[in-house]
Image (cartoon, rainbow, N blue to C red; front, side):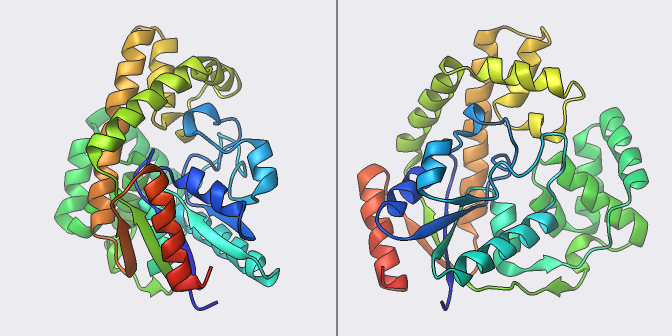
Length: 302
C-alpha cells in the first residue's frame, strides 16, 4: 500500500460511526488516534465503540492502558506504527481514526528525537504548575519556542514535558532532530459547519450524563483517588468537580458543554493547518459517509 488512510476531524463529527460503517463493507481495522479511548473504564465520556462493535470491526489502541498510566506521544507513535504494520501483514486495511491532532501530526510527520523523561524534573514542574498556574510557564516556553508553545496548546502534560526538555538541555523540543515517519499517509478531515456540530455536541453531553457518566466517574475515583491524567479529560474533569462538592450536577453539565465546544474550536484551528496530503470534507451525516467512500475509492480503490 502506497499510503495509509487517516480519518480525522473535530469531536462529535462522526468519525467513529463512519469507520464502523465502513467496516461492514471492507476488511478494515481501526487504529485509534484518540488520547482518551486508550484508557480502560473511560467508556461513556469518550463515546467509545462497544465491545460488540469492536468485535465486528477490530480496533487497536483502545483499552490498552489503566487510567493511572501515562500515554506519551512517543509511545502512541510506537504502538500505532506497530499496529499498522501488523494489520498490513494480514492483508487488511489499517484506518487511523481520531481527533487528537497532536498524535496524528506526530504519526504522519515524525517525532523529534527527545531525551527520555526525567521524573524528578517533571515532579518539580508539576509542583510549580500548581503554585504559579499555567500561564507563566506557557509564557516561558513561548519565549524560547513559539512552535512548541502552539503545540502544547492548553495541555498541562505537554507543557511539563516541553519545559522539562528545555530546562534540562537548554534546547526546546522543536529544535531537536526529527525521526521520520515509518509510513506515508493521506488524510481526510471532516469539516462540518459549527452550526451543525455544536448542537450535536450539546445533545451528546446530555446523553452521556443520562447514560451514567457520573456513576462511571464515581467508580473511577474509587479506584484512582489521586486523579490521574486520564480523569482530566473533558467530561470527566467536570464530573470530578461535582463529586467533590464544588458545584451542582447541572453546573457540571454546563461546564462539560462549554469545554467540549471550546475543544472543538481548538481542533478546527489545529486541523486547518494540517500538513501533508489533506482533503477537507465540509459535510455531516449521510453526506459525510458518501464523501468518505468517494475519497477512499479515489485514493485507495475501495
